[in-house]
Amino acid sequence: MRIVVAGGRTQADFLIGNLVKKKHKIVVINDDQAYCDYLSSTHKIPVFCGDPSKRFVLEEAGIQDFDVIIALTYKDADNLAICQYAKRCFGVKKVICIVANPKNADLFKELGVNTVISSTHMVAEYITQATSVENLIKSMNLENDKVTITEVYVESNYSCVGQTLMNIDLPTNSIIGCIIRKSSDMIVPNGNTEIKAGDKLLVISSPENLKKVIGAITK
Image: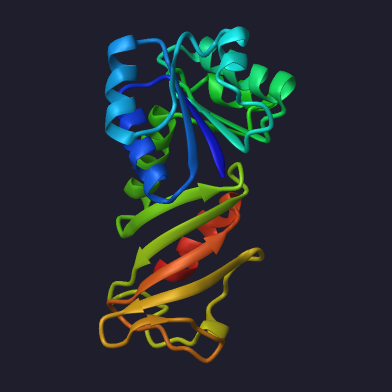
């Protein structure tokens, strides 16, 4: 894919390194000349020095019809401007940004930003889930929060232990898609697969059904 990384410092450096390894075509826009020189020499990619929240800077960077732009500046308003210019003026297909203020996340989505990442919101949500379900190991949202993938460790006292999947009362729009078991590594389960203590379950669900799914497994 053709991807623009706009702004940022350490997180931009880390992200660029990962994207370059995956053979994506990367263009970087940053307003710090010294950091531009560092990114250019480190990653051997095109780097444009300028304020990415300015339309003429985006135009000079040649981002027309790119697949993705990722806005990583420290100002939420600048990140919104970057995303809106990219989508409306340059035909960038998907726009992504970070926000410092979690209250801006929903607003930015309403204004056309495809994916808004709030580290504060993600940490708060994780803590809320983890305190209610101690064995919730990992949880992440996909497709603009329409799908949740959660990894759950099965304790020996859970009612699901010894039960087959067909006998576990999961809510609609949820499945146990994979089981990680020490003895046989990964298992793609079917209705007759039995849950055992020590299993790690990869659960796919809608966000609103996550608590019901966890309850069905852990009760």
